[in-house]
Length: 88
Image (cartoon, rainbow, N blue to C red; front, side, top):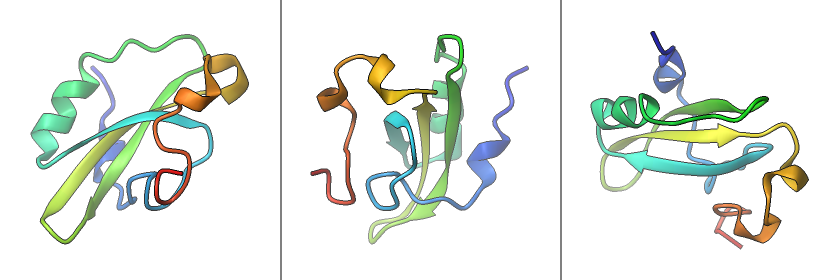
């Protein structure tokens, strides 16, 4: 069974509140949709799933991301999904 308890943590998406070494994430409007992604992510050694939930001006959201041990070993560093607060 996959541990999805991180979805219950109040944590803004990394494009709003940057999170160290998170290279990719997806945002969903329901916990069930986020949980479905969790079931299908294949991680390399040393990688882990991270995520949480928050709310924007539209509605609540849940997000799932991948945290890597070393961003420089992940691949093309410029391809990291959103670097800063505004995606810059």
